[in-house]
Image 1 (cartoon, helix red, strand yellow):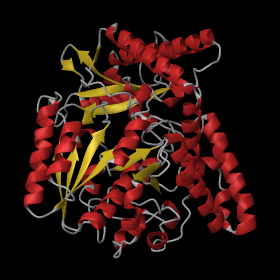
Image 2 (image 1 turned 180 degrees about the vertical axis):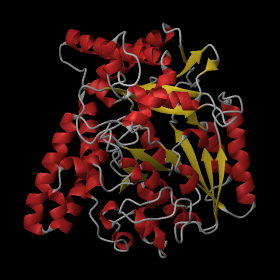
Image 3 (image 1 turned 45 degrees about the vertical axis):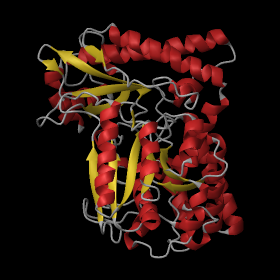
Image 4 (image 1 turned 90 degrees about the vertical axis):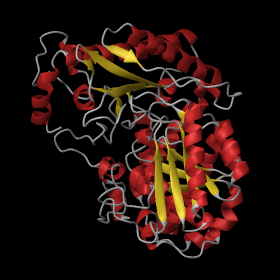
Length: 520
C-alpha cells in the first residue's frame, strides 16, 4: 500500500510506457500534457491527448482514499480487484453494453497485444494481421500487429527491446499494412479500400493462416474503413477464418454502433483518453459475451503477454484464464480510468439534444474560422452514407484536419511539429513577440501533426482541431442563453489558436532556437 501514498500527480503518470514520462524542462509528457489540471490551456487535442480536468482529478483523489479504507478492511488485493470489477460495470452501463466483457489495459496499444493474444487462441497460432488505415493508426501498431514489443519498457517497468518478438506471441504471425491514403496524400475511394482488404484476406486464407482484420473507426483524420458491405462479404466468404478487431480508440462513434460491432462478434479497442478526454493513457478491449467460454478455456499462455497485463485487468468471471496472470496492482492505469469514467459520466449526463447542438455548432464555427484564414485549408471530410442513428450525435464531424499553406506550398511534417510544440507553450521567449504578446503567451493544445504522404523524408502534414467530451460538459447549462454564450467562448478560443498559428508562421525560423532553449 505504500505506493498509494505517492503524490497523486506521480501516480497518474505511472504504470504506462515511456510516453507518459515528463520532460523536466516543461513538466509535460511528449504530447504536451500534464498530470494535473491546466485550466488556462486552450485544449482541442482530443485526437491525441489531454491534461486531466479538475473534476476528474478530484475523482481520482477520492478513489484513492476509498481504496485505502477498503484495503484496511479486506486487504489491498481484494479491494483493488473489487474496485476494478465495479469500474467494468460502470463503463458497460455508460456505453449501454450490458452483456459485453471488458479487459483493461494501460493504453490502446497494449490492448492490441491483448486482441492478438485472444485471436491466436480463437483461430490458431498461424495468423496474418491485416491492418486497415495503417497510415492513420498509432505508431505502435506496426509492432503489435506482428506480436512485437512497441516500446523500450512495459507498463510494469520491465525493460524490453522495441521491435523484438513478445515471447510466445509473435511465432507464425505476419502482417499486412493497408493505408487509406494514396501516394499523393489523397484518401482512397472506399471501393478501392474494400478491394484491397478482400484481396489481402483472400491471399492470407489461401496460404493457410487465420486472419486478424483490424478495421478503423475512426482514424486520426476521422475516417472509417472498410465499408459495412465489405464486412458482410468477409463474413459470408470466410466464416470462422477472420476475427475482426475494431480500432475505436478515438471513441467517435455512437453507442448503437458499438453494440452492433459486438453483436457481430467483433473485438473492439477503446480508450477513455481520446474523445472522452481522460488523461493519457487508458485502454480497454471490449469482448463479445459469446466468446467468454472459449476465452476462459484458453490453454497455453504466451509467456511474454504476462509482461503486459495483470490478473485484475481480466473479468472476475473468467476464473480459469485470469488465474494464470500475476497479481499486480497498476495504480496509474486504474486512476487514469477513474478519471476517464468521470468524463464519460459527465458527458452522458448532458441531454442528448444539447450534445448534438453543441457538436453541430462547433463544426459550423470551426469550418467558418478556418475558411476565413488565408493560411489554413481544411481537409474535406470522408463521405458517409446515412447511419440510421447508429452514431447518435457523433455522426457530426469532430476532427478538423487542416494544412498550413505557405508561398512554397503546404507546410512539411517537420515544420508542423515546430508549430505544434510552440503552440503548447509561451512562445514569447526566443521569438519576437512585439505584436499580440497575449496570443503568443497562450498555451494551446491541438491534435498532433499527421503525415499526408509517404513520399520523401519530410512529407506534407495536417494539424487537427478537435471537439472532445469536455466541449459538451463544460458548455452545458440549463439556461439556453448561457450555454450558447459558453459555446461562443469556445469558438473564440479556436480563433485564438488560429491567430497564434498565423503569428508563429511569420517567425518559424526562430522556433528551432526556442525549442532547444526550452528543452522541447
